Length: 349
Image (cartoon, rainbow, N blue to C red; front, side, top):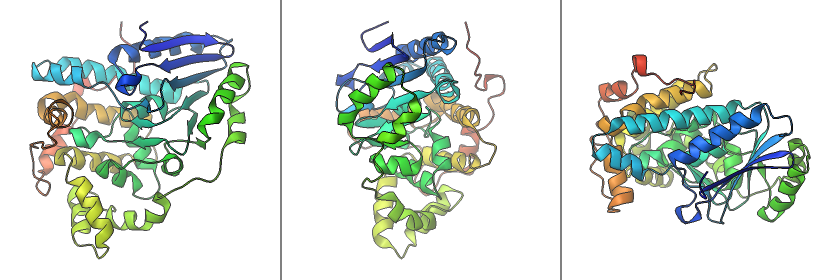
């Protein structure tokens, strides 16, 4: 175990605390493995009543996965590293979603990308008014992943497509509205809640501390979002925005969309549409995401997106396709079956 994460038993709680505040608690490959090992150990430990996941610092619960190693491997032509990383991370995401004991997460500050995979699949997801949750993957050439595509698909109306394509950030109350969180509780109350959970109080009591009022922006935009993001393809959505009579909303959405990878967005729209099926579950979503990420280092805009946003920070990526010209076959190829390489949820080794 490294100092980047603290895993221990305290009273009735199995505790996982992310501790990389200077990196906004970005999740490393090693941290994923340590979390999975702890979950395995605690599942049948009758003295562990529930799992608590939190993080050090005020700025972020977890602002995403640590993607620089993925970028470096991809630049060297090592595509297997990313395939291994994403397979193991997605298995952990499924584990958290399906865990037989309550999983309680405290989501202060930024929770994005990989942080959503750790913090937003549990049974009790706590935010405060200042929390900011987002799925920004399309801005670096990836699709919304870590199971986030399923949450987007289940969001009210066509809100999921809006959030995935614009990468808009949600404050605490909006995150609850969209299905990424459960309870809005002021952060100053969190230490007392944690102490009670450690002492053995039932996780169900958290609802008693929830604040039922909070500033929201998304409900007021719902009708507008549904009207503009109701298409089944990226092209449909762009057409609706470009021909909109609501020019203020459309102009704002188009400005955000224009920054992102056209290929990733086209695939994201397709994935979210498929995951609206009533029988779709977390494994369905992760397996579909893995089809894209398995190919991402070699065939997507990911390397260029990370270069532009994280490495060189010039914010001028050169995407593979123009926004209004993503070939249908390009999207189909990224989401096609992997055959023998399809995502397995069985732990290896």
